[in-house]
Image (tube, rainbow, N blue to C red):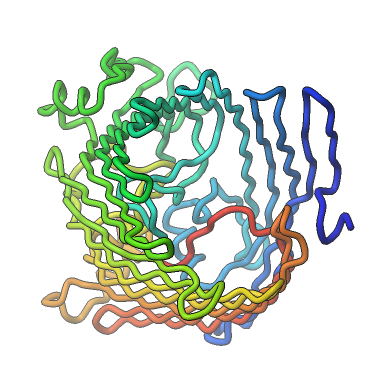
Length: 435
């Protein structure tokens, strides 16, 4: 009963309810294109506690400790950016493996029927697709204070999200024993309108600005706290130390099981513009057969700027994992029959060389080895097939057998992955390694 249907520990009282569950990922695999002949693995152990106090306050906390050895293309990204995709800093251990951890904790207060407040360390995601070019859960967790307001019979929703971000670049030493990392603040505003339940229009404004805790190079801006969408972009339109996004989000369920969605990012302060379009369908031809198709394109970044002036956190993009200078086609099909799940994912991307190097997908040394500079693009495509058996829906505990095939190329440089794996895990968060 505990294994297949329930949480491990449950406390259920009139004014308090919480559950405690283990989080884990024990996996092993083999990349048959890897000449080192190393075994890939992941050893994740953790704990998750969630619940609520009364009718208005809920909470969530979890902690994960990990050791892992990844396929070569993921290890190259880690070496370039000093982080595991979606997680934090790493410590190298034996034979190309890494040690890393992750903590999440937040509390949510439903203050009224029309206002909700969330405070803690977590991620956020805006959109209906697999990717988002406005704000996604691609990067590491960050501290934030988030407000949601509803108006006009909940047809309008306004979100304010104040975040503390950082780059993994050290500042000059100050009074602290160890140099601090470059700090940034982020403010994300989203105003949406739903004239009917199946149709949503929204406008988005994201601003990231440097924050120097030593007070030597930047001042703190009172405008940061202004709860008016586009305010910071207007009053700081000529401030090149700000990274700004102005975007549009659209979703339309034109039938019960078909959803078309679209996002646009209008470049501000010489930043690249882009768009994403896709659709999802559920119960296609038969029950529990689902399909997603998505296309994204973002222009190349002006990379002749300080690294602190990027829409990023912990050296990873706050929006699409590929960052900038790319086109991507993605599709996914999955089918569920009782406790069995089959899933197929495919991704193809074309990337500007300099953007791919900046965002960690290519090494700087790769550019020195190019034989043909007339075709300034790198390409990559990945295919993942996975078969799962679900043990427990409460924790999404499953056993999975899968394959990831990936090829990449740029002129005379090629890469290949043929990775087979077996995993016993609780799949509770998104991790994007299809880049």
